[in-house]
Length: 154
Image (cartoon, rainbow, N blue to C red; front, side):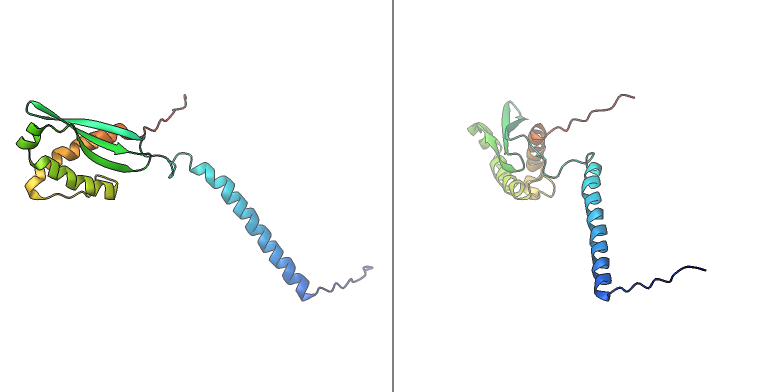
């Protein structure tokens, strides 16, 4: 055996620095991979900051005997701003006195909750509130952003 033995001396400080830099390098590479490859997975899911509604004022009609009552919903891109009646006739308000009261209560709750789910109403105006909620839902469906999906041809 004609090999010379080489003795290498490392300082502990250099070993610790090297280990720290290797760990930081691995963490940086993992972070970059997670950042750039993780975005591709979210393409099928809707963006959280996407608009829920097309801003505007939308109406829905309720047929009450011979009269037609229009419910108006005002929305911006992410919020329901108000719910109200359009051209409320005195004859309708006289024949259906719970309509304005019920709509006022529903308006407060809907604007606060930003959804129709969980809206409560008293038993006195149960059917009136249900008719109004149905009309408000129809108006909100007109306002919702329709997501378009394209299917790839096989």
